[in-house]
Length: 118
Image (cartoon, rainbow, N blue to C red; front, top):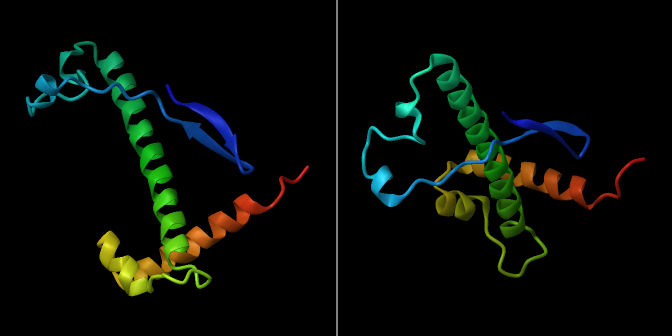
């Protein structure tokens, strides 16, 4: 199952490895990470839970990278900086959400640039 890791003072779950499926398997809409072939409900619950945690962790991580990129694109020190509206358009967000993501990204950048506390 997912394993805990430490990151910037927070306890995080390391996602279970996602196994990529061959193209012919993904063509079948009923096929999903071979879950349909697991007959034991305990094993099915365990594997489905692993995948759920892995996808949640991947989503959280991807969101952090989106926020960092948004903050970098909107950085006022850049000569080619984008407005929040421009970032929103590129990411298919509302402008209000883009503003929040830019601020979130700035916080992530700032927290990663500080030396670790001992």
